[in-house]
Length: 235
Image (cartoon, rainbow, N blue to C red):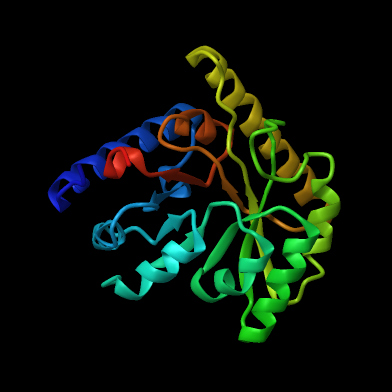
């Protein structure tokens, strides 16, 4: 059942407490980890709640859903980020309706988004999605191919590469899922550090970790955790 705003505040406070505890365990400042409220499949009130609570942005999985909901949102300053898989034929819509696209994972998509952003007269911030857990069920570029693609992304004048994103694979047991999470997040952090050193660019954003695995993500260096069910309940 969709929460009231008062219930949302309690849940958001609880998630922030989890983030703070994970940061304390990792020796990090909790202000370096952003909470991205994932509003996919929820009513536009979910975005309104996030803005009212003081969150900078919300995450959506589908371009069309966000395109329909965003004009109804009561908070025009709220940023919208695409975190779901993007088909190249929806690049123009994505460039129009999102403030950042996190799910860029191919040369083809980079070309389409760059062209769409140029037509709109804007520079579109992006994250490059990496399949850092080598999961055949997940989207994202291969770890080995990412350096080449990141260098290609930096040649696009109408795109701004802010960093990297990944989703950890699920395991057959909770212990295996936890092991996959640690490995995936460590892989992405190591890749980011190597790329930043080699290319001389910060790639500051590491979008990794969700409701169930935010602690290992923060331990590995996540700068943004994407949380939906812990805030809004099951879909």
